[in-house]
Image (tube, rainbow, N blue to C red; front, side, top):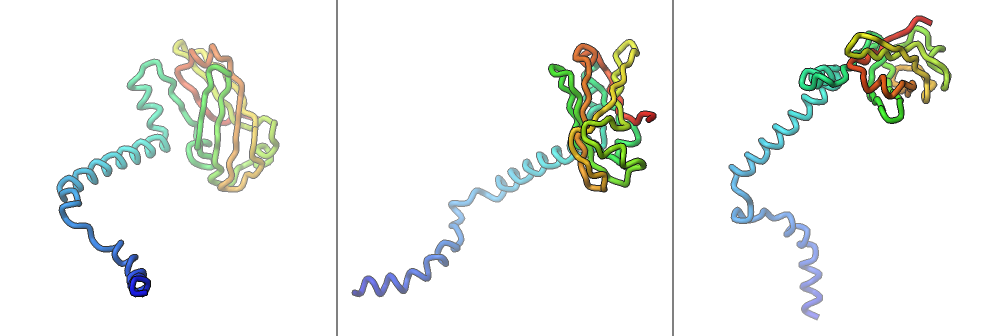
Length: 177
């Protein structure tokens, strides 16, 4: 009987015991914790800088400076932030396909041209090789029929894999309709 009564008295104190501070001997020294936190901060800062470069388009050009054979992505005014912003881009050399995911950031001048899946949109990719020859490919709307700010549009175009592999610059800009 005595045991049951003591258990009932001690049971409510159990959560409070879990919150008691850990003895200093069990904690790592302050200096090592500080160094670990500084290392995490440096890692996070590097990630933020990389994301900012990627968002501003600088990373593609920085990569090209490091590798002379790299493809330089050059966004035109319409996809440089207003009214459209590139959120994802992919050039699949094996499939011969160029895909873009765009975010609508401001009202479009001709929203009807951007609302029919499967139809061509007034945006093209120009692939330019080292000799200066170029080929232009119109994008088609794959998904997304809303042109309101905040909406996403998925575009795609077919490209010749050999020409894409030889390209050194990819320019994404509007076309005359």
